[in-house]
Length: 148
Image (cartoon, helix red, strand yellow):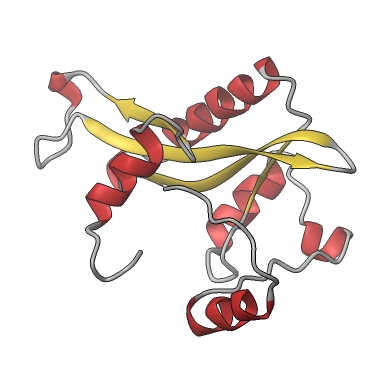
């Protein structure tokens, strides 16, 4: 996010504006089961749809967070709902990343049947950002700009 924009403003614009870039599932519990801090919203999954020329429609889960007191079954339910939405839209797979230091999550997902594409297919996730993205954009021929 750019230094001049606040994270909340970007999330509101990009997820809840007229042309959302992402969708979000929110995990909420009844007040009597709230967190020690009094929160009833105890987790979220931020996701968006992508398209694979090999597989067709896909759901990509960008972020999943569940408060520690509510992990376990809530994580499983979040995945079930997320991929149920994906299947309803005829998505053929659900993709997400797990950081290499997060061994418990990686083992959990593998135990549920997820495939580690790094090992299985040799995929590497790459990113351009900051100066590298600016430099790459400078090499592109002139074109119209997208509206925000």
